Picture (cartoon, rainbow, N blue to C red):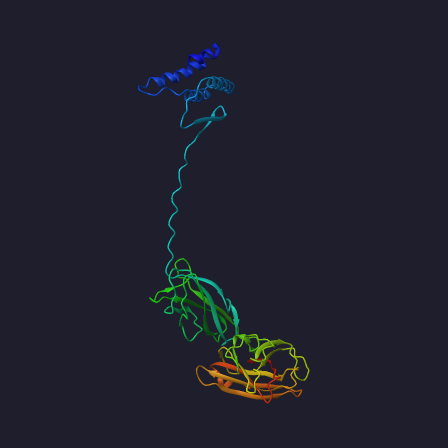
Length: 396
């Protein structure tokens, strides 16, 4: 302290006396270490800052800083620094190790059985159907639970309008967590106009229903709008790829096919087809080409359709304009349930610049769920048989 007093003038003695008071108070505590000069100076600065004006405070800081620089400073472990932006505000910054965050909480375990809906593969919500129209609903679902869906799991109808004869189906194969599956159900639209919804869920091997959502209690559904109609109520060309197509060379034909698939046969829809008489139709047409063999044939089995009284099957039959060697047999067949396949009509067609109109009364099948089958067979020739159905449909 003596060295400090000799370096400042008498007019600043008041300041030094105040600093000395802090030192004396510290010394009055028994068995305490020698006071830290820097700490005492800092404490004096904080006290004076609250009592003096800005000018006095700044003068004091300059004088004490000079004194501290001329005296040796002991080493300390922690530093307390007082910084002030205004005479009446002091911010104290402590250096040290910040508190550590709590450990990451444990994730909630996945439920055993849980579904995530991916998309509708067929029949989007509120799809328009004719009364009694057959269709196949297909959902794509993903397993987001922790358990594998085995073939002991079932797809089951739970509420609403079933629109299917069978209301429970076994899963066709196992689905591990993270995998997806497409599930299909053949259905028939109700015969009365209106909106219809059927709700479905899965059932585990323990008989527990589960579905969507955090609680796995929400269903997935099929929703259609049935519109009563007169005129054409079913168009076979528009539904061509809903049918299962086969030929004399394969049990499965892709739909639509390609005109280059002569060996296996093919089926495809065409806009404004040209008949063998050279006239261009303003209707949509269906080309069916049997496989290239003497006994070649092609056949398409359509989804179930509920026939009503007053329904008629109508179409025009022709060879393709660019098939001058065409010689084929057209046939419309049907099957009710698992019963035998039966024929409704047969027509022979050769390329001779003419076409045939067909109108078949379906009233004898009224009230029955019918699978209609379009079939064409090769006649005396097999190399040029492009058979054309012009707007085949059911009219009411």
